[in-house]
Amino acid sequence: MNFDIKRWSDVEDKFSELSTREKSLALLSGLVAVLFGGYVWLVEPVQLEIEKLTRTVERQKSQSGQLDKQIKAVEVALEEDPNEPLRKNREKFAQQIIDIDEKLREQTVDLIPANKMPQVLEKILSQSKKLKVLQMESIPPVRMMDINADSGARVNLFQHGVLLVLEGEYGHIWEYLNEIESLEWRFYWKRFDYIVEQHPKARAEIELYTLSTSKAFIGV
Image (cartoon, rainbow, N blue to C red):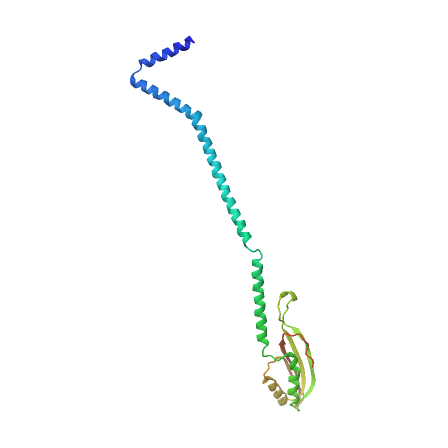
């Protein structure tokens, strides 16, 4: 105890010997030391904690922003109809089928109906007494398009044909062909074979066909 008092007395004596300027510097240094110590022990820990909390808040804000984006994305997805692309494709396909059906009808509008073709050909033949009918038969219908039952198409196209074998002179056969060409109905010519067997007699094999949306077989 006496030692501490003596030390303090020595310090006090030495301080008294200092000049006013030196005393001011000493007091200032002591004040700085006290303030720095207080900062280290009191202020700095609080500041570090504040910085830590600030970083935590910023991180939570970032996570919250990402969560908001995810929520909005889910809300948009829920508002959209998941079947909309399929519905649009189906509507587009249905319109294509309607267009095809319409084109098929346009292609067959002026063709002779399949069920009338044999009667029309026979009627023209009945007007010509100079030709002999050797053969007249229907050709089974041929499907022109490969359409599945589930495709949705309402109209298909079938080829209906008639095979006609005539015997006569060239001029009479030619007149008969011209009569067919001058009809209000259209035919398609698939085959024409002209064979001279004994002049002036000849044989003509004619294969005509029409198109129809009906599969019904032509009766001859």
